[in-house]
Length: 325
Image (cartoon, rainbow, N blue to C red; front, top):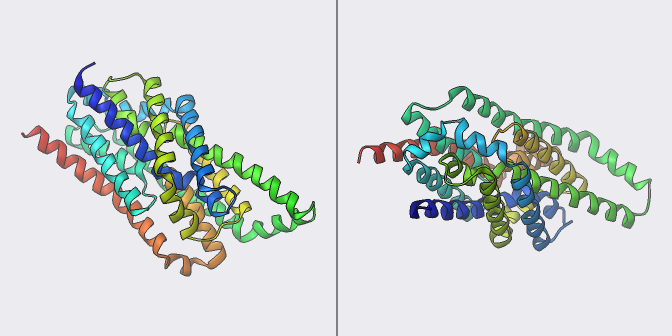
């Protein structure tokens, strides 16, 4: 294996670690905010199930990022494009982790590929439009479902639970359910986000898809354990208090949306989907006006909107600069 390929693999692994840290908020923030898991328990479960999701179901999205938006020979023909995607992705994710904001890293990575596709004239525009529609619908569906749940079903469910058994028994049952739902989120995250780290090097033919999934899974797991705790506080504690029942709704809805997208090979933002559910819970509890004034919400929404445009511009500029050297 050539030295440049080894460097690309190492860079992808570092990127996967940063993705694992960044996604920790989306994967376990709801349960952590509800007090059902400690920070240590949360990041350990993330590591295990993100790895399993990557190796079991990561292939379809890896194929999309490796050869669906632009032909695979775009990466293998000009290997600098691999490093441009990795550089743009790493830049955004490190910034997100540093600022403790659950930025839509998938959008930044996909749009880095889009920038290259626009410059080379090889972008599959129909595929990108299809993906963009998913980007709009996934957080919208998560928001609507969890808002309606929090507004109209939450207290009815609580009332029903109190008629069944003792409070201590109910808490134990809910803790088991939320553990399952959190693991489901981490598994779905691994299946969808493995491609963000290794799609470019798989597309370039550096490593096969399965080996890429394993590499990404290990990286995401390690990143969650080492760095995931910081961003858990922002989403789990900074937006609104979350009860266990609400957390189960947020996690289960988000995980299902993400896993369906994974099976269809669509790279979507786990952070947006889960965080939208948390914001919806805040709207149901406190109202839209008060939630809109929350500094965490404002910062998150700004990053979500700005990241794709900045990623496209940066990627396009870097590939243009490289090609004209």
